[in-house]
Image (cartoon, rainbow, N blue to C red; front, side):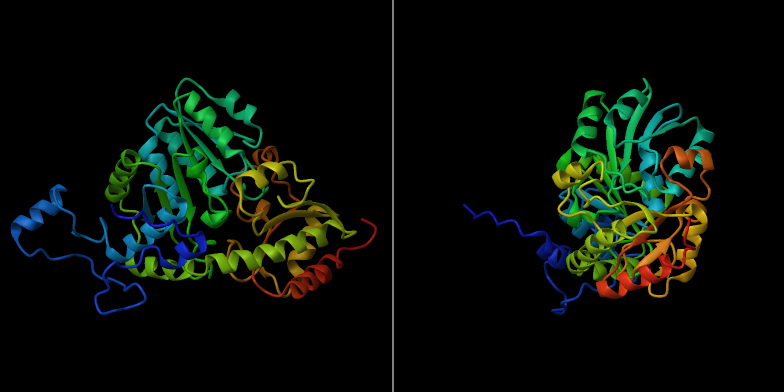
Length: 400
């Protein structure tokens, strides 16, 4: 009897998962198979591949060795059945909605979800009779109360963007099972290095690969990971037909980025923990929201379901919106830009940037206040990051 291989640790998986089992020329790095189509040795072989009777490549929109390597890597990290690479993070989100929602059905979602995710439900899917309810999913009672007879999906983002609220994934999964619903989790803010929702009962995980998994702010992409074969086939068919699939060169860049995911997250997280403490003590900072702080309302949940508290901090400064503008206009090391998860530290203002398309009343209901500043902490030296934030915050006029 063949001895079962010992499971590898996640840092090792990040480096080795997805490599070719049999290298073509002994290459160490996964090659880029930059081809649109694949030849068949015989007509019979081509027919068998198209029918699904035999494995093999047909056309890059349907499958490509480089893209499949990345899909295997992320699915292994997430401990799912299989992954599906997409052109962007929003391609991943919309593909899941297209696959799981039908006309007249209903979805319950985190209120402070990524702005484009919320808007595509409210403005586009609503045109086809799909209803959506947005609640603070960090309170599981809100999820229970929002479920309707035609609800099909619970969609949560945890940590949430940009409030950094935490939803109990296992608790949400229990609710989903009780009502025969599917639980989809956007795991972008944690990455599979810090959190694996499928292990906690989720059915599907989505990622913007643009963020932590790629980690270098030089490529966009998305990923869907299904828990089982049935869900995989259902979503994969929609992805192939609508064409939001990933390019092989794009996949190769992300695969290169994921190899350093553990190193980058550990360093950036160490910086974030120190910066959160620093901001808490700053006289011109009104509040700080970071799951690693003991006074974070979901600190204990984060401890239970995450392997670390992440690298994203939201905070408010005194003098509200005007004070926030002062900070954003005076940072020198932090880059004023949207996105997150790169090696460089970014700073942005969600209310008039990433979530500007969400009406003000809805933003505020979701906890996205005008004063909220979001920072994605990178891998620079902590003292340099601290000094940059300090000098920018200190430019807020005194006495406010």
